[in-house]
Length: 424
Image (cartoon, rainbow, N blue to C red; front, side, top):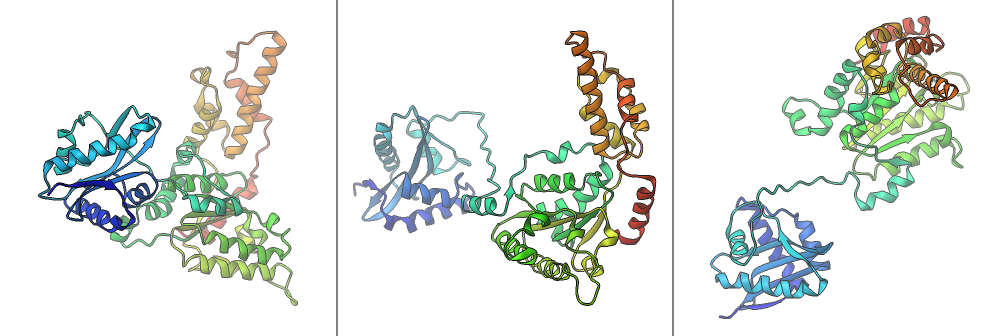
């Protein structure tokens, strides 16, 4: 019986889905997902070959930038080999008015469909490797993400966190790996975390680490600002509840609340203090947040002692992690990040790392930028563009003029807090 070549009809969709599934299970899975094939059937170019009203071959394609791409092609078993050629020729004629330069197809391996393509003028181009990366936020979530003030952070922020190897290893093991590789975590009996508290002196990088975790997971980052929520007509508690309800509609998210002690301080007083209702609401939201998969709540505080006891209780935060001052290796890495490549070879990083003991990453950044600014001013005064006179002494001078964010007393209290509150 002579096959009939025609355009795709909606009634063909079930058959095409079955053919896609059959190709998937016989060891040569289609490159494009079923959802993409269905979308192209309905929006792009799709043709089928039938015999006795039975679909025996299908070709689905789309056009992009003067090139046609076959997103799905398959031929039923025991079908005359000429059918594939007839179908591909018909598809080519259909797409020719688009001015395409070539018609291409990606396949996952050798099978009857691939052989049919080769027999009908398609040349194999080796080496070819198909790479793909899913978008971290789907189209339907974009407006919602904007509504809650969320954003996608640049990739590789994790690698840009200078030094702090001990803290990074801790976060990698406790947070990132269980969330990014849940199957691996399950094999070891590890439950993915839902909430974590970061505490430490100001300027030690708690916000930076929260953003780095979001970047590492490739999840949207949503920061909630208590001061902004307080301006809501419904009050801080109502705004907090509304924000968490909106975030629940996202597939994934890292939610960050900095200076959380502002809304989770010790509840005391009779009658209740104005913040007690806010603390109660936050405790409720944390409990509900923990029931949702694909989300991580990161809270940060400079004053862990000020937090309400119920807030740090087991069952609310999986981990209470200290983020302290950078060690020598980390300090050297931070200096290296801010010293220009043109002079880094003549600078004694070891001396700078030792001299900046007790400084936060923000302190070191300030000192490095101040030294560079002073060197620029000298060059302008001398009428030269040469920055080669910037050396170790310049950085030491800038460092001597930099006031340490963390005092000795605060550093001592932090050590005590680690013993009292840390839960790793």
